Length: 394
Ligand SMILES: Cc1cc2nc3c(=O)[nH]c(=O)nc-3n(C[C@H](O)[C@H](O)[C@H](O)COP(=O)(O)OP(=O)(O)OC[C@H]3O[C@@H](n4cnc5c(N)ncnc54)[C@H](O)[C@@H]3O)c2cc1C
Image 1: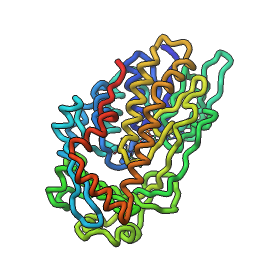
Image 2 (image 1 turned 60 degrees about the horizontal axis):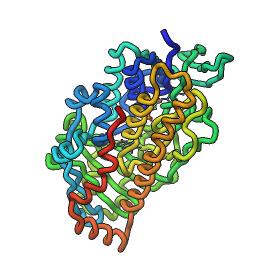
Image 3 (image 1 turned 90 degrees about the vertical axis):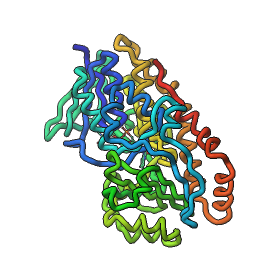
Image 4 (image 1 turned 45 degrees about the vertical axis):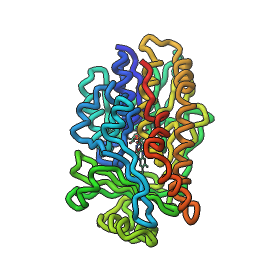
C-alpha cells in the first residue's frame, strides 16, 4: 500500500477531493475533527458546473432524490415587494449546460459524498480526528500530528490537502497565504416545514434585494423543507456555523421592507447565524507537499452561490493533475494552483460585486431594478455562462 494522501476536513471540498483522488488510484485518509457529520450549514444552490463534477464522482444520482431543481430565480424588490425579473433555470439551464441546477441541504450533499467515499475502497475516513500540526520527515514525506479522543498519533503522508474550511489550520503551514477576515456581514438562516409556506414559493428560488440586506429562499430536502437565508451588516464575529440568533434583531434589519417579504421572515421562530469571512485567494495555495482547497484557500461571499461549487471544481482539477505515479508533488500542487487561481479570483470578485449591487439603496436601487427589468431574462442568464459552463478536465 502507498503512503496515503491525507485530507484535512470531510466537508464538501474534502470529500469531493477524496473521491476524485481515490478514483485516480490514490490511497486517501480523510481526517475530520467533528465526531459526526451533523446537520451544520444550510441550503446550497448547486449550479451545473458543480453538478457536472458530482456526476463524474458518481454522487449525482444518489443526491437527486433529496434535491429540487427550481424552475427559476425570481428576483424581487424588498422595498416594493414586487417581482423585478424571473431568470429561468429548470430544464432550460440543464439543456443549455448539460447538467442541472439544484438546491439541496448541505447535509444531504455531504452524506451522498460520504456514503460514496465509504464504498469506494481506497478511502479511509476518521471522524473525531483533528490535524494539529504537520512536520517534514528526512525522506521528504510529511508527518501529520492527529488528535483522536485524547490521543495524538503521527501519520506519515505522501501529501496533505487542507480542505479544513474557512478557519483552516493547515493554511498556517502555507506561508504567504492570507488568513480569514470578517466581512462585516452576518448570515441568518432558518428552515421551515414546507407546509408552512405558500406552495408557489416551493417552485423557485426567491431573491429579494434591499438596502444593506437581502433575502434568499428555496425549497430543500426534495421540497419537504423551506430554507431562508438573510444577509445583513453586523459587527458580530464568532467562529462556527450555528450560533443561535435573535429573531427580533433580524426583523429590525427588515423593518422598512414590504409586508409580503417581512411576513416570510416572521414565520420561523428560531434562527441561527454565522459571521461571514473571506479568504483572499491571491497568496500561494501550496507549500511543498501541502495544498489548500475550497474555503481554506479562497472562502468567498455567498452572493454568487459558488463557494461549494469552487471547492468541488478544485477537487476535480487537483485529482486530474495528480497521477498516482507523480513523484514531484510540489510541481503537481503548483500546476493545480496555476490552473485554478484565475477563475476562482474572478468568481470571488463577481460575488463581491453582486453583493454591492444587491444591497444598493435609494435612487441607485431604483436604477438597478429598472436595468434588470429592461434586460431580457435570457441575457441576464447568459451572464452566468462563464461560471455554469465550466467543464472539468478529463
Ligand atoms: C450563507 C451562505 C450561503 C452559501 N450558499 C452557497 C451556495 O448556495 N452555493 C455554494 O456553492 N456555496 C455556498 N456557500 C459556500 C459553501 O458553504 C462553502 O464554500 C463550502 O461549504 C466550503 O466547503 P469546504 O469543504 O471548503 O469547507 P467546509 O464545508 O467548511 O468543511 C471543512 C471541514 O473541515 C473540518 N475541519 C476543520 N478544521 C479541521 C482540522 N484541523 N482537522 C480536521 N478537520 C477539520 C470541519 O469540521 C469541516 O467539516 C454558502 C456559504 C454561506 C456562508
